[in-house]
Image (cartoon, rainbow, N blue to C red):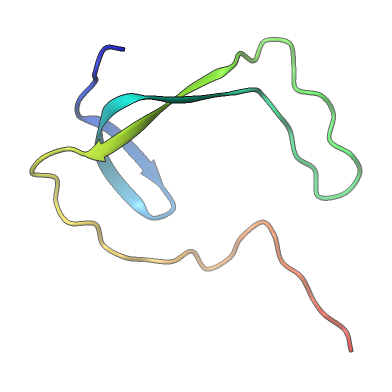
Length: 78
């Protein structure tokens, strides 16, 4: 495992700089569907080697935010 530093990521919460620590697990490709069963993933996808990470030294503090919506919602009718 070669440690990598300063990996820039961005998601709905903002930007973050990370360093890899060590390999953690191996995941296999999957798919999702909100309706019928999801089709099998395409043959070009590979397995994913996951790493534990830590925030890069001297990275600005993370600003706490929350997304306004998500992909999963439920309405309960009583």
